[in-house]
Image 1 (cartoon, helix red, strand yellow):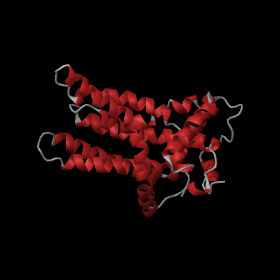
Image 2: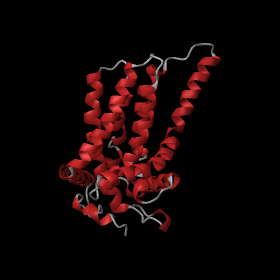
Image 3: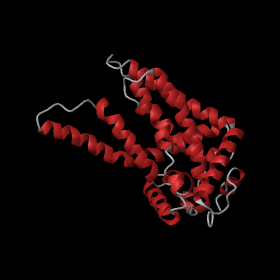
Length: 260
């Protein structure tokens, strides 16, 4: 057994989903996730800090748009790598206490792993963006500004990814270091546990966490700050519930993929 897997019992008392109504299971896991967050304020503070910095850089990049000095755009892009790595750290933090040094070390460790997954997941969107530009060039017209069509397209695409990657993200933390293997495990878990996993699959954790960055450029600063507070909190809450379900059904990691 994974050295951390038994610790899930501290915030996920549902031991087995056999014979348990899926709605009962999700309610229990959500309550347990909320208790875990409440008992670990460091996790909540760190989450708000990481996303708060991202929001600050996002607002700064929007305000300097057209100034010819892309420093905040570059900083925001680099900080998104931290967000990717922190997604793995959050899952570990749900299961045991982490000090600052370990938070930094784990986040650095997960950056490359989740960057590879993100690149795989965004390939269809990149293909779509290029196709739109090419099609407009073929008809001899200027392509519409990306700010006009990209946010809604990304929003619905992230909703789709939320369902598709529900158990892929915890698999990449708990079971394997390989994104393709995590994709296989995540899809297999949905297949094997359906319909018991249905409520977990529709929880929009990824979309909520990214919502502030998907707002149109003309959005008010108040709207951006508001969504950057509410979105990450709800996403964290949902992630705890999904992790609890995953650990009840997860395959054991191989010797080469033992998690930290």
